[in-house]
Image 1 (cartoon, rainbow, N blue to C red):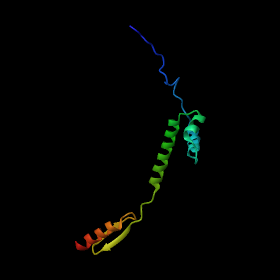
Image 2 (image 1 turned 60 degrees about the vertical axis):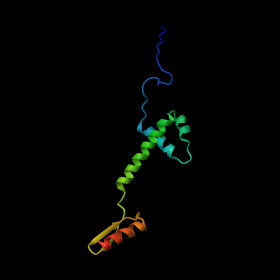
Image 3 (image 1 turned 135 degrees about the horizontal axis):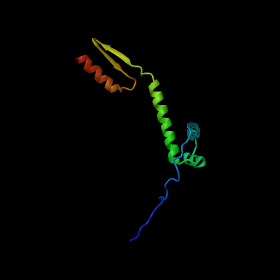
Image 4 (image 1 turned 45 degrees about the horizontal axis):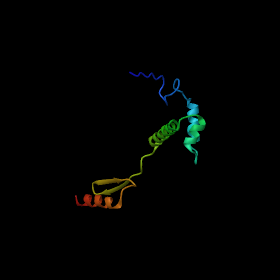
Length: 108
């Protein structure tokens, strides 16, 4: 019988998890968002895993996207009144679709 005792697997982290301050993360993300920056090389220079820096950057972009969508004003609608019907359409409607809707309202 062969018995192997492994104290630590290769590639396993040594010691406790490292904790990064919010200030450090913010500075790292700001540097990673600069144009023409190699994020992997930046991460290695900072002593952070590239996957970790990509994750921080992704979380930051998601937060920005949620903030802008919460403050986004509703799209302007155009109202078309045909007899008793009011048709409200946004700027993204295709002309062919609008023509079909108007024809359907007029024949109803």
